Image (cartoon, rainbow, N blue to C red; front, side, top):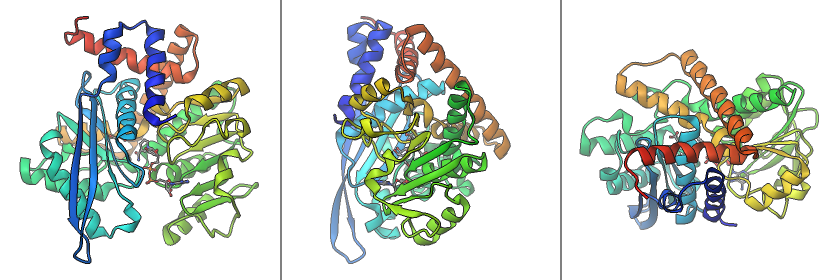
Length: 411
Ligand SMILES: NC(=O)C1=CN([C@@H]2O[C@H](COP(=O)(O)OP(=O)(O)OC[C@H]3O[C@@H](n4cnc5c(N)ncnc54)[C@H](O)[C@@H]3O)[C@@H](O)[C@H]2O)C=CC1
Ligand SMILES: O=C(O)CCC(=O)C(=O)O
């Protein structure tokens, strides 16, 4: 099932649980605005190359639209639409005053030089600068982008609108980025996993983890889980997959991946087939890369007891059904990976106040939000007698529906 069909399906199930008016349901599904722009840049060899950039602004009932920008060859309009919609429910689940958006450029960032990436980012910003802004739509990093990408957007945007640090989050600290934002999604995954395991009478220490993806989210989650005594038995990224039943030495792997640009060839573990990473024996599986990776083809073979969705929409609805029957508990993306956008919110607040928080305050506040989010999701599960995904969707959809109605919706 494609990402948009899967996200729409989950939304509709939640809408039925809540008994939403059918016209309101339809209106909540339709994006506020979809932007598609042509971005042509000169490559380093002087030839011209064109790319397509997208920004889907899904909903702004609760505040400015918010969400990352992804650079990946598989970026397409349906996927960006789905990701933008997920941001709307995610910011509502986190209870931060934002709507949802997502953007992306169909490109392979590993095949572009730094100066080509800079030109592409600046052209994209020139094309969308009138449609983003501190109180309109605030981009952030996602797959294939990072603090440097945000710095270029900030600089290009500021040429048109004056210096505007709060137009993007996930910036370098020197440009007003927040302490703790780099680690925030991984740290949020840690807090979310702790909440789930504690509820099931377990703790991080002593559990075996498998992580797919070792970029920003996966590597921070691995580091923080390792520090808490969790045993990470397998890890993969685009270069390959590795396994060590006794537990991978994560500090050494972090050092190795910095020097070698991937996990492939790491000596402290055996190389395994990348396709089998999700099927490895473990207690907690953390997909932290692409969407749709857990599907009807492999769900039956998954051995984990818990899945914590660090990636966006890693599990499609067919797999949800299969895993539910197997008794696997899934902590859904719109709660589990909300630590990133929550600290983005703290960054935006700091920029607007012109006052910088210390890292301890950021991490403590993040823990408060993640703990409250888990309780709110569980309360919805109790009210509607549903699983965690529907608990999170009904929580998010209900908050957005209430804001929409208060702002003047009439059926
Ligand atoms: N960066 C953030 O703050 C947030 C990211 N996310 C989600 O987390 C996921 C990962 O994002 P980031 O870590 O930021 O991206 P990233 O670009 O820093 O890292 C992506 C990782 O996935 C790996 N990867 C790519 N294709 C793969 C494949 N076919 N098999 C195995 N690994 C593969 C890459 O090698 C890399 O290790 C995405 O789904 C993103 O939407 C969600 C919330 C916030
Ligand atoms: O930090 C943000 O604003 C957005 C992060 C994001 O794109 C996501 O949560 O999927």
